[in-house]
Every structure is written in structure tokens, then in C-alpha cells.
Length: 128
Image (tube, rainbow, N blue to C red):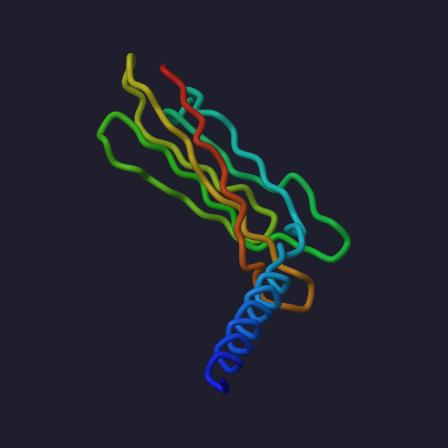
């Protein structure tokens, strides 16, 4: 008789622990800054893409921007910039090539470490 009661009470406790654990999971705060990525474009130095700060809320600041381009050579080239400086990447232009720009922007909460989730930018594709 004691065994069935113990089994039922253990099952009940396990069910409650699952409910409590699922109630704890929640999304974190929104990032304190937003970043933008320009599509690949032909310029004087080749094909360029730029990742730059779009703006920050009162509790945030810029930390790192990264811009990357996949070009004709099949290799992804990246450039980074710190603070509010834009990250600009250029690769040689080869007509008829499809270029893919990607990047990320990493903000910082004022007075704290870098925000844990960087904003993923792109991909933006252009056949030039």
C-alpha cells in the first residue's frame, strides 16, 4: 500500500518540477543598439559592404561592427570596427559575379560587458 502512494506522490512532484522549470524560461531584453548592413555595391576600391550603427537606446552603446563579403574567389573576407566607427570591407570587382554581404553588430550595456547576443546582419545578395 505504501509503494503505490509513494509512486503517485513522486509522479506528482515530478510533474510540478516540470511546470516550475518551464515557467522560468523567458526571453532576455532587447539589444540596446541596432545596426545596418549595406548591400554589395561597386565603388572605386572594388565591391564594398558596410556594417554601421543605426542607433542606441539610453542604456546602450556601440561596441563592435563586422562586415563580410563573399566574392568571386569563394572566400569570405571580413573587416571589423570598434565603437561607433563603421566596418567597411572591399574585395576586387569581377563583372558577372554574385556577391553576398553578411555581418553583425555587437552593442554594450552601459557600465557592463558586451551584450550576449550580437545582431546578425544579412545576408544581402547582389549580382554585379
